[in-house]
Length: 179
Image (cartoon, rainbow, N blue to C red; front, side, top):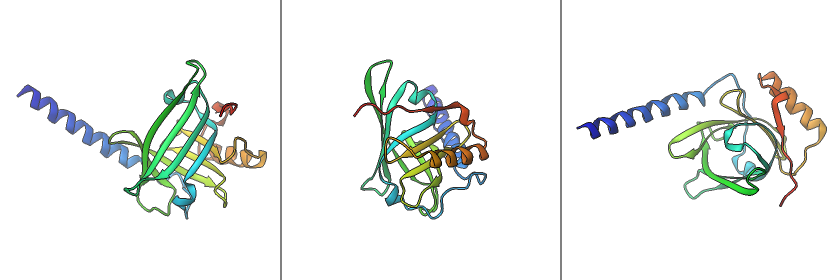
């Protein structure tokens, strides 16, 4: 009986986490790219800058590669070189549109049923540079198809991020010196 209570409690807690986390994807205070072409977004991106957080601590040479899975979701393959451990690390997850696939609002998961918001808030017409905001102001990424980004794009994305309430002075500028 005690084991059953623990299982039911765990399932209820998981359901609540999913409910509350799914609500955060629908925040209307962050305008996302519309129209958004998921297929054009696929491929390899270099992380130019990020707000640091535990999963990417001490990583440089960070890339994210997006590919289409057979089930229609997106495979997310993040790689980076841990400068403290002196080794490559990789994390593979999945992403899917929150609602409208023509909108740059995705949910991403690296841990089973738990998703986080991934909002493409700026992208150029050629899908070469992107500004991605998390579901709150703790997560922000500047991405590029190349290891560098032009100064005018950098400045525009920093200005956009600041207007959304992000502390751009706290950004980590990622080094790309390994292949």
